[in-house]
Length: 91
Image (cartoon, rainbow, N blue to C red; front, side):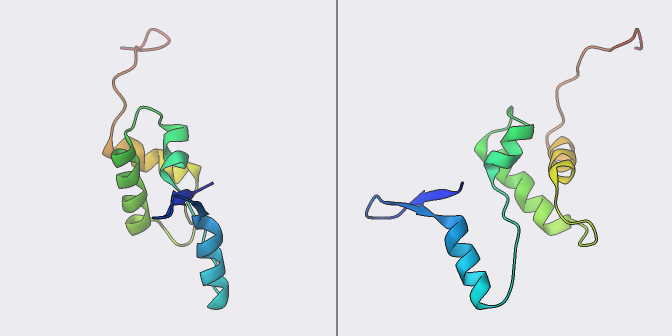
């Protein structure tokens, strides 16, 4: 859940507010957050995860949308994983 704290210190459900706004305009949107990116790439910082989201938002294919694979691929492009030991005897 995407919660934010407003000036009064109370927690606000951002997703609910966004969905209410979209409903007023007869629109929908899938909401992804940095927690989603960090769920597949826990090694990334909040800033890096945010950069992944921004880049996916700019470059995703509308035919396929945004999904876990899209997030993972973009994260790997922007922030390659450190080399892992070779497997199966391959160099």
